[in-house]
Amino acid sequence: MTLKNICPNRRVALAVILTEVDDHGMEHKRGLKTMTIPAHTKQNCSDVIVRCIKFVVPEDLDVSAKTDSICHGRNFKARFIANYIDNDFECCSSVY
Image (cartoon, rainbow, N blue to C red; front, side, top):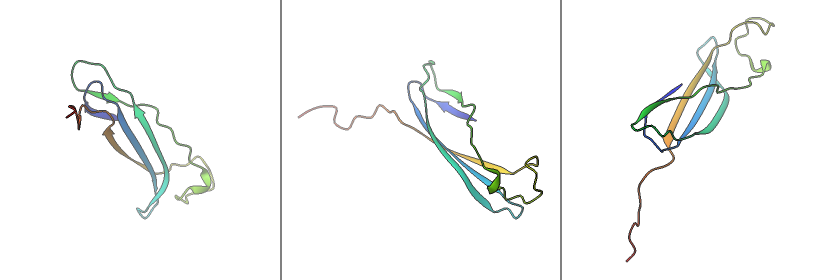
């Protein structure tokens, strides 16, 4: 997946929510991962590519009900939520 227009020197918190969709369009929870994406040091805001997000999904949770074989396809949906961790805001920069 690609995080668009990420500012330099700022880490990003990323959550991935995985669901499996059955034949009736109902979604079933399958996993959640959270991770920290390290800051980049390019001059300007840039896209950041995130690769190799892996989930282990047991066969006994298969909702496709097509066959007893583990060789058939399953329908998964991934959603992503991201926000900056770092910022340059200072609430009390001066002491009185």
